[in-house]
Length: 195
Image (tube, one colour):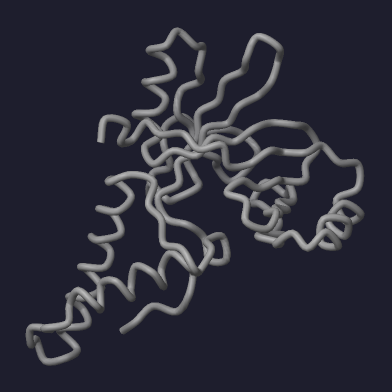
């Protein structure tokens, strides 16, 4: 529990590529899972692959950087600064390419960041992730990196279960634990949620 909110997982390495489509075809041939291929609001393209069994992924991009994933961006940023590292303030992306000061106003997962560099010019991006996107989670494993992540999942399940009980005439569900478990596993795997 001592590291709750401060755990950092090396999750993504951005590989500089000259042709995203050529690289996408190469990594597809290797049998790596394509997690994402979409255009961001700033017009840039996001392409992410994960090697089989790997907890870390790659982004195909214009320049190299490394992503650290945390469950609480403000706690992680404060910890980095406390260690004497020059770290940016927390920021989020607006509608364009510019950074907007402060965490994402809706505290959406994947939307709040801080950044720092090492003495050799390597760029690190710290990203807050509290709920995984569909397809990003191995459906055979349900894993939480901290008690904060698990508590958030339980709160979402509790709210959804309350709606389930309302639809069921307000009766207490004796199998609530099974319902919560199914909800949390499906949510983390990006599958359709129970009603």
